[in-house]
Amino acid sequence: MKKERFRFICSEAEEGRDAFVAHSPSSEEGRVLNCSMDHVVVKTSEGKNRCWDFHECNELSRTKEEFPWR
Image (cartoon, rainbow, N blue to C red; front, side, top):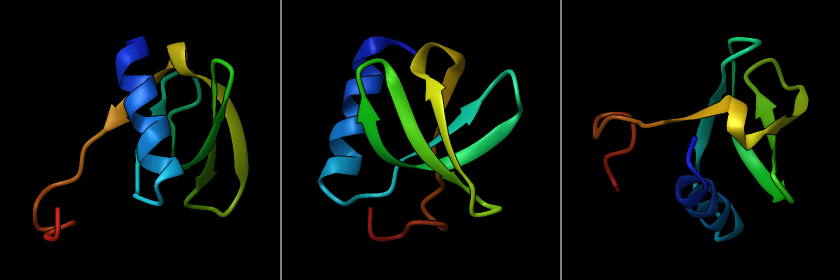
């Protein structure tokens, strides 16, 4: 992911909005909890916390049906 998107995702998470990323090497996905330096801290659907380098992540977008209020 590009640095600009990383910053955007971090600001979304800081403001309490949902942001999701996928980690390419592990094929895991998670909701961004916070960011630290060049890493995102996420909670996976299995309930585990992970810390990933943003360079290894891709932003996940959600459809209007999944998040109709956006």
